Image (cartoon, rainbow, N blue to C red; front, top):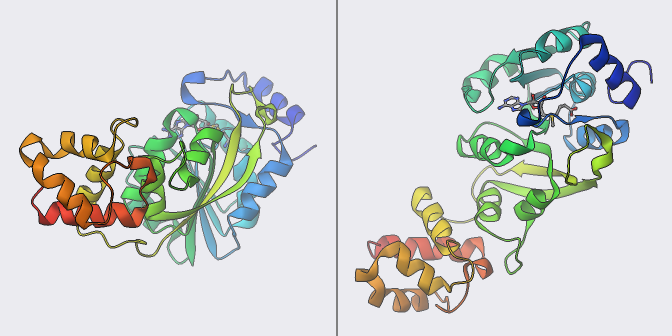
Length: 290
Ligand code: SAM
C-alpha cells in the first residue's frame, strides 16, 4: 500500500496533503484498484520499445504503472492544480512527460512525433473523463494518428455501443464509426466502487486496435459517415424514410430502386445494416449524385 497511488489510503493521503478538491465538471474520478490498473496496462501490450499517451492522469495512478511498462509516457492533464502533484508523485520516473493542456485542443500528431520519436509504436491508455469520451475518441480516430491500440476506461453503456454488432439496440452511428477505424474488444466491466469519488454509472475497459486500412471500400469518407448518420437519424423510422430526409424529396422516387439495386430492403432500419452495406449504399448514392 505504500508506493502505489491506486489504493484508497494513498489516494486520500495525496488528496489531503495537497488539499485537492474534485471537480465534477472535469470528470474527476480517480482509480483506487490496483487489479483494474493491471488489466488496463496488460491489455495495452506495452514494452520498453513502446510509447503510451495518457489522457487525464489525475494524481498519477495509471501513469505510474505505465511508466514501469512502457519506454516513454506522455500524460496530458487539463487541471493545472494537478500538475505539481503529478510532478511530485512521479518524481524519479524519468521516462514520464507531463503536459498541461486540453486534449481536445492539442495538436496530437505533433505531440506524438515530438514525444515518441524512435519508439516502435504508440498506444493511448487512459481512464477517460466521461463527459468528453466521444469527442476525445473521435478526435483520436478521425485525425488518423499513428496509434496501435486505444485502451480506455469509459462508461459501460458507451463501451457496449462501440462494440455492438448490427441488429441490436446498442448499434448506431458510434458503433459504425469506431468499427470503421478499429477492431473493438471489451476487456472487462468495472464496478463504480473502485473510484474516488464514485461515479453514478458502471464502467468498462475497451481495447480498440487501430486498423491499418478500413475494413470496407468507401469512396468518400465524409459521404459514408453522412449516410450512416442519416440512416440513424430517427431510430424508429425505416431506412427509406430516414434517407428521404437526407437526400431530399426531389430524389425520393429514385431512392427505393437504388436501395433495391444495393440488395437492401427499403423497409429495413438503419440499425440492421452492416458496415459493408453502409459502404455499398454510400457508393451508390454518391454515384447517383445524392
Ligand atoms: N487517470 C486518473 C485515474 O485513473 O485515477 C484520473 C482519471 S479521471 C476519470 C479523468 C482525468 O481527466 C481527470 O484528471 C481530469 O482532470 C482530466 N481531464 C478532463 N478533461 C480533460 C481534457 N479535456 N484534457 C485533458 N485532461 C482532462
